[in-house]
Image (tube, rainbow over all chains, first blue to last red):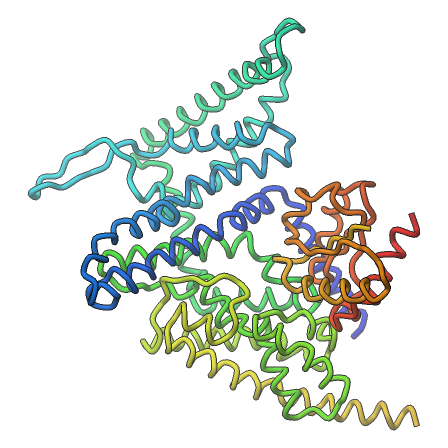
Length: 433
Length: 101
């Protein structure tokens, strides 16, 4: 048994290291980490619209003038959330260029330019039932629907451009007396030109052969199916369980899976906000707010419920001490004191609930969404917002109820294992005697 | 001595940082101790004399070691003292790393 668990530990650690060492995945991860505040602010802009500027749900009911500033908050939402593909491309290209030891800012700009060169520069407009085209970039290419083609293109362009900047033959030779700054700017000229020509022609060929813009194609073939899988109960619960297996080893599961999770939760919240602001209903359940407030409520594995179970059932002083120490961090979703202090890491007694509880919590929250008890959120909260407050901001009172149900259910699932640990402690005492 | 801790988001290590500062103060030592997100290590290069990683991000050790090189010693915080927020023990670990250089 110990050999098996050792092998399991080795395999997962190697996987985690591979994800960490992979420069593409870690560039994507870092780009989304940098961009996360903008997504949260974008979603808060919709909250301000509802609380301040709406004549039905907001302060504008009493102060009608507030309705006038609604376009300002809508603009904040557009400039952050509905425009996210562009800054994400820039950031991924910069992060990857850093890895490649290529010039960072220029690479970022090149990647954005390359992307703009392959997306439509006309939009279809319908006026009085007659449709025509006008100059403009369609919102789908700038917002979340462009994320995956943006990510792929940023990586390809950066790899190409980094290679080109390292070829001496295409550098323009300057006399030694020319200042270094001027030489660098000339040296990037030819690589930029080659990169943009290749991308623009490739995009053009793609359009001519398939009749589809490459961003629409990647959205339909790659992104949309991934969204469906990620939002399906089986898909998201599988992601959650994998994340928990890493936690069982004491490795931050959320961090390991973030390169794939973060783009998809960004897409989800953007879709929800877009749906609600155009008068529809939000349909994407799994967002960052959903993850924080339900999947890892009170700490990944719903460890806050373990603290409750220990307070109620445990006869072990060492457990009670750790539980007390972990209580306040647990309220903010920080589980590390329990994970390493108890410890839960590779602890066979608690392994089953530690891995499964977040899956159960996900199922409960999805069920509450499915039956219409809780709406999909349009407001994400950052990590560290205390329990009960977080779901209230994101999902309103139904969210608070769902979180309480999760804590109650998971306290029950932790309980039998706390009782087992009581018996184990007794045996140990007997042995010592 | 400048001791930097890193984990995911820098939140849970900040609990340990507070306990370490307490312990250092008690021992009358003037240390600078702080926590950052693991993504910020690169920006802090040169600002710390020793880097301690939370055990939950021990899978990044290999990447971070390449990044930091011989600028400063790096170690994973011993997990039980991390979990129990034993500031004194973690402080001792940091000191022993620098002392061993």
